[in-house]
Length: 69
Image 1 (tube, helix red, strand yellow):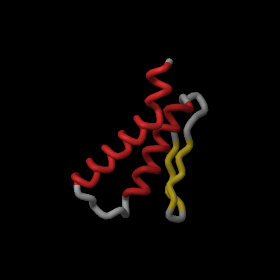
Image 2 (cartoon, helix red, strand yellow):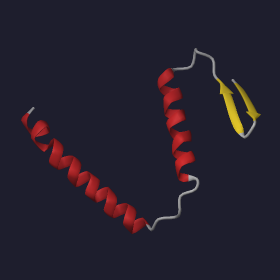
Image 3 (cartoon, rainbow, N blue to C red):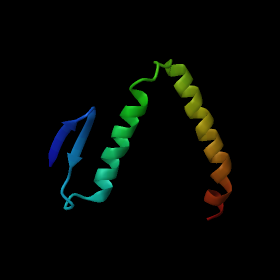
Image 4 (cartoon, one colour):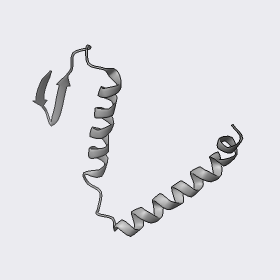
């Protein structure tokens, strides 16, 4: 693996022998870090509430499919 820093960018060269799924996981993590690096801090209670809403919505959308299979 080769890591270079050029013109405000970091270039990573990875051999094609590395599993593509693992590379995608790494890229997803780097993207997450990029997106959250400038985000303001959010109170944990807000995160908890959003998580609860997402889970409720997911369950409502998938309940029939999961219970009828």
